[in-house]
Image (cartoon, rainbow, N blue to C red; front, side):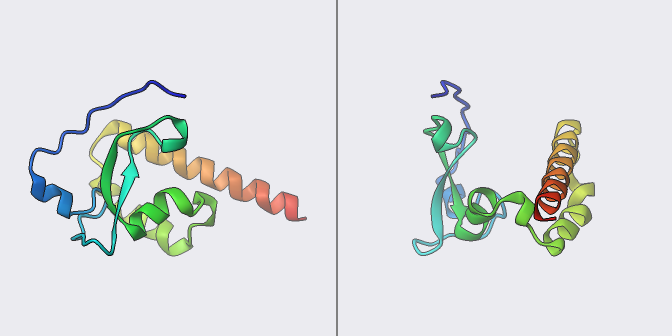
Length: 109
């Protein structure tokens, strides 16, 4: 297992009432604890609050199964990514997803 540890500081208790990803208000009915930044199956122990929808998109829906609408939304939001590292990560993820889709299509032929 991984011994990577990253400290995500959340100073204000009120921040636990919002999804870490989309900032939606959380309740006991739609709040989950997402292992971040290290996944549970890689030894992660730290969690952040997430709504069920965001947690599903992150962990339960493979990226190669995301809809064209999701990819379109990402492209529209791309200008908001101000960090060089985030833009590179985004580009790598898009490339990986497209390669997975290409491979999947070839396997189906």
